[in-house]
Image (cartoon, rainbow, N blue to C red; front, side, top):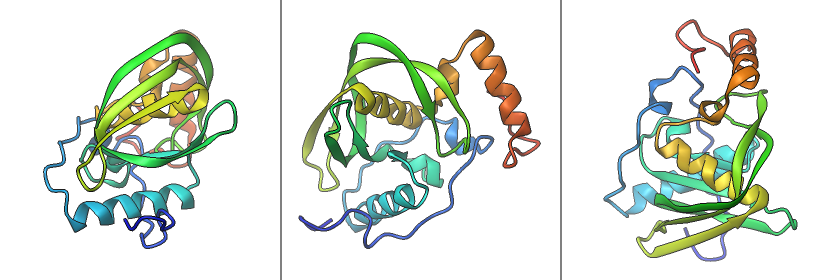
Length: 185
């Protein structure tokens, strides 16, 4: 990505992987090649996220099992955070646990009150291989934890318990995108 360019402007919108696609449930592989294919993937992730629209998107959500995600997400003070992380590691999730509405582009139209910490720190690399550390608070911390879950093969519904989990399971079976092979939380 060129410095100063609009993320996703050169990317192509790719189809989203939906719940039931095995790529969403497998831990993703580390990126080892920081070349033009990775830059193209990041551009495609931004283009797809903006088209969806969403505030974050992991590579496995477009069928690519690599540890990469992008984000364009506000925090609770309405400060906009835009970027990407390659080979992300959630190194801190702490502070106050808050339950807030959470959805996912791979489970379109659904959301549930999900508990997340209000502070998160993610370490990884940029598309060119430079080290990067991203700090998030509030809604942006939720986004970072959500995307780190994706690269580990987890979804927000995995954090649900009790009636919230049962309600989400019912909503999934009724969703128009639900496939016979999907549906299991």
